[in-house]
Amino acid sequence: MYTIQFQSVLYHNDMKGIYKAMDSLANAVRVARENGHEVRANLIYGDSSNQPLIDITEKEAIQKRYQDYMEFDYVFFGFNSGSAKGQTLLAQKSKAEYILVTNPDVIVNPRFLVEMMKPFENKKVAIVEARQTPVEHAKEYDIETLETDWATGACNIIRRNVFEEVGYYDYHTFFMYCDDVDLSWRVRLAGYKIIYQPNAPVYHAKRISPAGNWQPTSAEIYYSAEAGLFMAYKWSNDEYLNQTLEFFENSENEEYIKAAAEFHKREAEGTLPKRLDPKHKVAKFINGNYTDHRYIVG
Image (cartoon, rainbow, N blue to C red; front, side, top):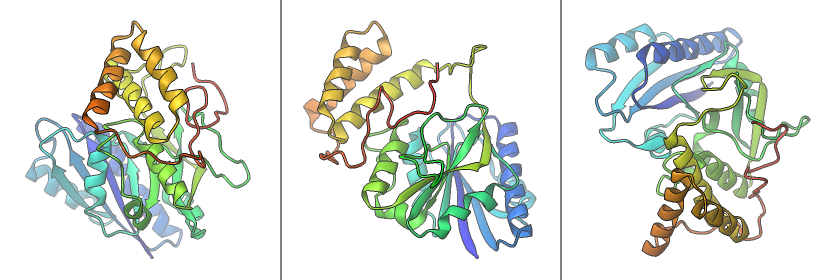
């Protein structure tokens, strides 16, 4: 038997989509049990919205609806936690052996748990990452061992004791974006493995153009740029940091300019993170990415 906590951070999400995600998780528990897995699951949402998305009546209805498959809990944070802090707060409440960190718009397939739990037979495996559709992440993985350099926070399962051991997400540094890369690299520095599981596809809603390109919002551009600077600093790559700062400072993109200004502000305040991996044992900065990629996303 194993215990697992499913957790997501909400931010003004559509309840119809949340129910779809919950239905898929309950179905995955059902199928896992039918395949001989003794699994005990609980689902918890942390809400960063301005107003609660779920009131006490709906909470009780959800608990009743899924009681045969998983326990349900809901926490209204009362502030915008961002993904890193929100996921950390939820994980710190858990005593489960495993934690599924996922976005609330992710729909898992029926055999999700069956396939995702297989790699954990190896005690050195700390994180198993699902395959996303309709846009699969381009980062490389070993086709024989399935090892990969980092796991996206959109949908992965992590051993709770390892999550705790490495200090959870670094939410003091990352509001959103790169918190998952940073966590993954710290997990690998601690001697554990990260596995990509192509046999566990999940649907992750993404905004894409008719040409198939990702269409980020201005907030996504800003936080991604800010996180990239903090990653380069924290993981001891001064060459990449200086190149990126120069590019941002001379850019006409307002979000890039703001990101560079925020970096210098924290630098002056002395609030930048402790530097890690000076010998570059795990950290990789390759053409703006954090590992080799199998293909180019336009």
